[in-house]
Image (cartoon, rainbow, N blue to C red):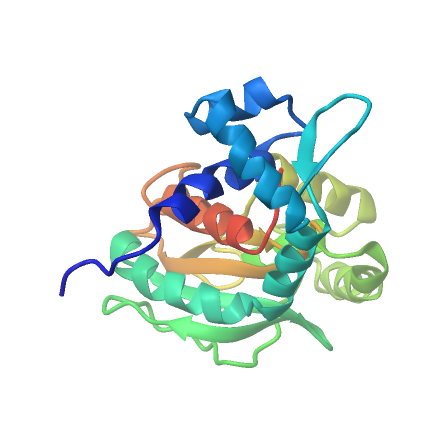
Amino acid sequence: MGERAGIQSVEVGFALLDVLARADGALMLRDLAARAGMSAAKAHRYLVSFQRLHLVVQDSDTTRYDLGPAALRLGLASLQRLDAVKLARARAARLMPEIGHTVALAVWGNHGPTIVHWEESPRAVTVNLRLGDVMPLLTSATGRCFAAWAPREAIQPLLREELALAQRAGRRDVPTHMSEVRAMLDEVRKHGAARVVDTLLAGVSAFCVPVFDADGHIALGMVTLGSGTTFDTGWDGAVHGPLARAARELSAELGYRV
């Protein structure tokens, strides 16, 4: 089936709106036109129409152009209709064959980070995890990821409870004091992802990368796990690299800007 016919002038004019959306602020006509790849005279004709539609506004003092209230309404309407988990499920299905390991999605639930989707690899290791399981903050990649970016008031009670359990159990492979937790979460934020090796499950390694919404809040975590014998635990390696890229792309779809 061939490509459907459209209105070329609309597509050409959209380049100006796209430039403004990506810019850090308002632009002079010459700069706006140059970035959109058209002459200033041609750009001006489009901008006149966009101003009438309130898609663009022009500052009377600086003569610079910026996005208008109609563009804002369209953007907000689009964001409100986005389903982060639905978008992530589509990406997880494509990502799993690329990295060759199970991919899961987690959101913050009533009791902590909760697994809501599971894309199992044909060579998946046997793990006793199910949809709806709540992941621990200290020992799982998912938990550490949410602990690093979730609101402090949401995670503090859970962290204190898990720390007490770790102390009573005499564990040496996880933090047992809040100062150690802070150092661990600083490391997670430094890498932009959480990683565990043989921590929650023997012989299993995992990564969890955050996906952010338009307000900069963590919307969900993209998780992958596999056997330590075949799972590349290197930062930006064959597993973490594609996972991080998928999370960045999904964040951008949800309106997040660095």
